[in-house]
Image (cartoon, rainbow, N blue to C red):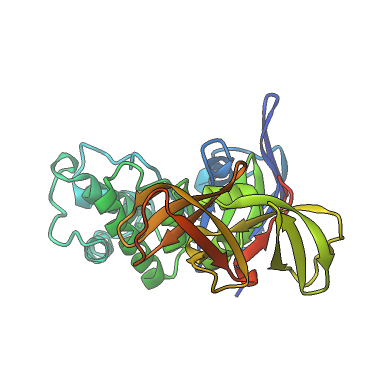
Length: 357
C-alpha cells in the first residue's frame, strides 16, 4: 500500500510560537488516520496545512506523490468537513450536495444520479428537497459529509465534525463514518480531542503534544503500550510511578518501588542500566484483586467510583502512592484492606517526554 499524504519535516510558527514541530507522517491510501491530542497540541494546524489553509514555515507536504506545499486549497485533491458544517442555508439538501459537482461542470443527469447515491449512503434517502433548517444536527452533519464526498476527493479532511452532537448521536455517527469510509475506500484524515472517537474509528492514529507527534500506531497499540506518561494519562490512565532498577537482563528489569520489588518486561532493543530511575505504568483494568499474579501490593481502599460494568477502587499503599484498579464482579467497601496484583507484561516502562516520534 502506498502513502497518499507525506509530511516531511513540517513545522509551523505563529509569531514566536511554534505550533507544529518537525512532523514526519506518512498516511496510507484508503486509511482512516486520526490526529489526536488536547487543545493546543497542533492537530488542527497539521490538518489545515494539508488542506492548504495554512502554509508550513518549513518542510514539504505531498499528496499522492505530488508536492503541494505551496499550492492553494482549490488546487489540491482534498475536501474538508468542519465542525460547523458550513452548509448553504438558502439551498436544499440536494442543492448543497450538488454544488461542487456543478462547479466542475458535471451534467445534470450525472449530478442527480450522484446525489441520489450519496443520500442513500449517508442515510438521507428521500430528503433531498428539504431545506437545511429543517434538519437535525446529525442530518446536517451527513449533508456536509455527502457534499464533501460528491467531488470524489483523494483525501477527506474532517476537523472535529462530531463536536456539536450529543453523546448518543456522536456514537451513532462514529459507526456510520467508519462504515462510509470503508465502503468508499477514501482516505480520511480525522482530527479530534476525543480518545474514544480515535480508538473506535481509526486504522492508525498519531498522538500530538505541544506540536510534537509523540506516538503513531494502531489504536490497540497506542492504548495498551503508551510511549510516554502524557499519552498514558491522556487515555485516562493512572498508576504512573517511578522506581529504581535493581537488576536487568535483555527481557526484563526488577524495580524497587515503595519498599517492594516488581518485575517488568522491557522492549527488546531498549537498554536500561542498574541504578537508573524509570517511570512505569500499569493500566487500571489490567490489575486484579488478590495476589494471583507476579507483582503485588497491599493497601486500603480510600475511594470507590462505580462505572457500570466496572468499579474503580483507589487503594492507598503508603503515604505517597495510590493505585486505581478497575474491577468487575468483586465488591469491596471503603476502608477494606485489599491486595492488588498484575503480570510483568501488564506494566510498561515509559519514555521521557516530550519525544518526537
